[in-house]
Amino acid sequence: MSEAAPESPYPSKQQAGKDPYSIPLEEIDVTDGELFETDTLWGFFKRLREEAPVHYCAESEDGPYWSVTTFDDIVYVEKNPEIFSSEPTIVVPDPDPDFPLAAGFITMDGSKHDAHRKTVQPVASPNNLKRLEPLIRKRVGEILDGLPVGETFNWVERVSIELTTGMLATMFDFPWEERHKLTYWSDIATMGPDQLAEIGKDEDDRKNDLIACLEFFTDLWKQRTDKPQDGELDFISALANSAATKDMPPLEYLGTLILLIVGGNDTTRNSISGGVLALNENPEEYEKLRKDPSVIPKMVDEIIRWQTPLAYMRRTATRDTELGGKSIKRGDKVVMWYVSANRDESAIPRANEFLIDREDSKHHLSFGWGVHFCMGSRLAEMQLRVLWEEIIKRFRFVEVVGEPVRIRSSFVKGFSELPVRLHRT
Ligand code: HEM
Image (tube, rainbow, N blue to C red):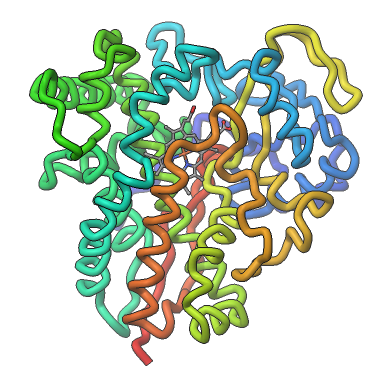
């Protein structure tokens, strides 16, 4: 018999499952992870878009914050980083003053951000990706060929996690046998307090695990210092040998690693799972794919839009300003809900339908916008494209045969379980 999970440190807000229109507008709190776990978020965001596209929530677990929920307003915030800063953090909770781990350059503004981004960007450039694609395809093939046909198994564990862990190990040139450490650190770094409690851990355990992560990567850093690899770019060598980053303090190095690990891992993982679920929920779209696999690149865009694996990014107002007719004060938290913008009918035609051959398939906000636009977008798209090209060669149907289990987090939007069965014919 399995042990009961420890009780959550936070009580339910009692929003999930309720009619969103029955709750006073000012009491709605969309950072409530239960809305995401139960997939009942949609009506809440629809109401905010309709009635308060810039909405103030005075009380949440992490204090007051503004929600920005329409496509155009989010683009405005993204385009004005001098008013809406990425410092000190891009998540709603403020950094822990005893362990001020900033998540690398995603939490920086201005020239420092640009210099750090420029250091690692070549690793995810089209040329480097072209070089890596055959290896990634080979690893995809090995994973798919090892799956049991006709039996029920958890797609998240056997495919989504395995594949993204492998992809990441490739990008870091990380010791292959140890690659599962990357998954563990990614999970630990992003878990909310509820999820930490579920696996019997607390904030001190989290710190200790992340320090172990730093130690491991510091060894790799030392091995690669002053040894730039000819044409074979990896994230660690890039950081260890660039003038902008080679002297970064340990916590800044750790933050950059966490950014690259979480960026590469959780997001792609949940797009892989989300795509299988969306195709099952829309059988006519699955049929389109079977008839014409050349639709795969467009389908990949649509899966990423539909899933929106990172539901939001936070900014902090650097001065008093106005947005959507509301007065935002200096220091206020401003949360850009990509998950809502991606269903905003005023910006995306038929936004609430999953259409794998969507005309303007790249018109979405899952990768953000502007100076912080996702640095790994091409890598993620390539990983998903290669995966679906290889799936379609082998299986007629990846059938979802049970209820998915969703993660209790309003930041990383994804799954811990997706029971499936494979059919060749
Ligand atoms: C489907 C997969 C992915 C999604 C949905 C995604 C989403 C995002 C989002 C929303 C941002 C912030 C954009 C903004 O603030 O405007 C971001 C930034 C970033 N992502 Fe991704 N990401 C994905 C895959 C990856 C991969 C594979 C990597 C590579 C390891 C990566 C690395 C980064 C980095 C380094 C940044 C910071 C960019 C900056 O601050 O300049 N991401 N991503």
